[in-house]
Length: 452
Image (cartoon, rainbow, N blue to C red):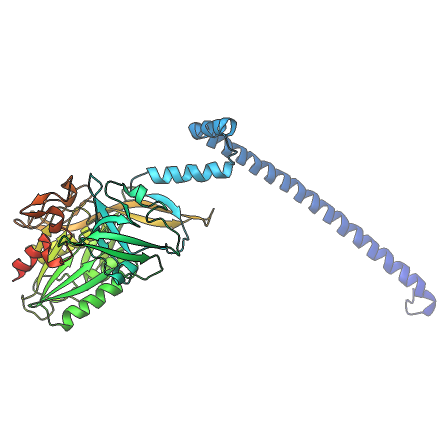
């Protein structure tokens, strides 16, 4: 029997211990080598699999997009500049997105607010140009430029007969940020006046208010974007503060915007029956033909402006051929809740102007994972508004169908005039649509007369 505690057995003990550990190391090494070999084999198989999948994917892409690949091949071979695959992919994506329909497209995702003067204008077939809108808080507004002014010249160069593309060049409005322009306009009374404008950053308001007196307030809503909800609420507060009971809501040239903003604004303008409540009333439905999914939007907030007026509240809505999308959705809800049999007060609503655009499709903006330079705006579904049909509520899309005005309150489209400066009823036609004195515009005149 060995006594391993005996000092004479110390070396023997160490040798025996070394032998035992050496055997363990060998076993571990063999196992590790086996595992490593297995991992290499698995990695190779996976790599081959995904390489094959990628090759198959590229082959499928080439097979599915033969025209695009042939075009790229010809561009690479014959185009006078070198074009990378990445550039071609970018251009092809932009082209595809922008041709799906007139409302979809690929656009830059992050651009600083453009330096601008703060007004927009419309043109006729002879390229006469009329200022159709002046933004609140803009340089144009500050110097006194007005809706209805006719543009005559920029920096003493005539703009009459020039198209918009030419007017947006550096010779006219496309100037650098630090440069000013001198603009000559003809006012509604026939006089001519010069204005000096300088491009600058400004925060425009999407809604503005005018008190017309005699209990009548006027709200011009330019869009359903940006600060439109907050701006409209401020206008509504001014309307109530002045004790008014008659509202002219101007949706002319309003191309639409956010359904969330629509939900806020609608709560001030619709109610059910003879009730004052507006919160939760369904305004619009968005339906995808592909997925059949339907999203419902309701009025948010119990804010109806006619609350407590016992049928004395009157609403005149002004529209034209450029009233589109969310504007039409709001109009559809107003016509259903305020102008149909569901409303006890039959004479509460008037719709005045020309038939609307008929844009009943909605776009959604998607951020891309492959690039941060662009965002994709894409049509995702149809809008449906409530109507009364066969004595009951139905939901119907208005896409491609203009919304009409109240019988007897129709106005010819501004865009139907080849020359808006032509004479009608002893004055230039444009004065009926865009006038320095907004009360003199035909739609506003009709509303004022009806509300009185």
